[in-house]
Image 1: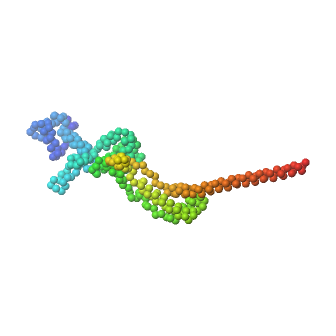
Image 2: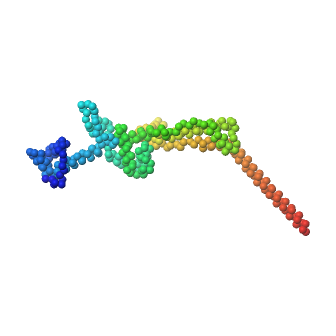
Image 3: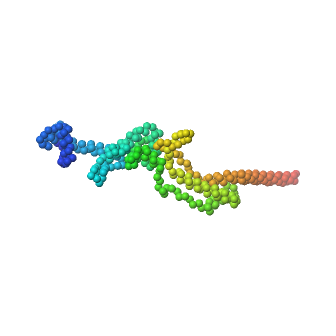
Length: 328
């Protein structure tokens, strides 16, 4: 018989009776009453049937948890509203009736174990970061910590809901990023009065005079073009950071397969800096001439100062000589 300390009070339910029947069949026990059969099982196992029942329920619960798809309910209703309506295991139903096997607890660890090199780990973490599953500063690049595991579990949950393989789902996010509309800069309405002032001030700063009418018109168009380019390149910088990997086909590179690679982002044009550089380029001859003229003026001033100094010295010597002669 089981020890008293192993005894658990179990309410006689249909579930419990079914479990007892399965025990009686498994151990092939005989008896005229329920109590005699229970006693026989406890004699064989050395445990109370109540404890055996609880352990069986715990084992089933662990199994259910293990096979609960990430991000999905453990069970689902099929044929709802019909005579054939029933509640089934979500995992089993999807596995048996679709081409998709949902991800469950533990799959993330298996996936991460497959990243055999430090470079693979870093590349995968970068993808999770760019897709919004990892947060900058919350993980160590190249180290598979809990934050990376949690990020992957969230990706697997989203993949289950989409009914897609995690890598395909991740790549689709990277190729088609979604942004809050407020992130996009509005197309600028060019203020030509402001641009005109910039043209005049820039030219005066570089060559010391205001531009002529024809120079002003040309430079105003250039500056407006730089401003428009700055806006367009800023929009492009907000676009996808990834593209499908290319292969060489008939002498040219074409996108192929499902894998993606990161695209280096180009820093948007700085309209003001580009305009100043263009003004210096266009007015370089005049700037060089002004510089030479300034150098000539400086040399002339030095010579004048030197001559004046010599005259002063010569006049002092003449006066000293006259005084010295008189003293004799």
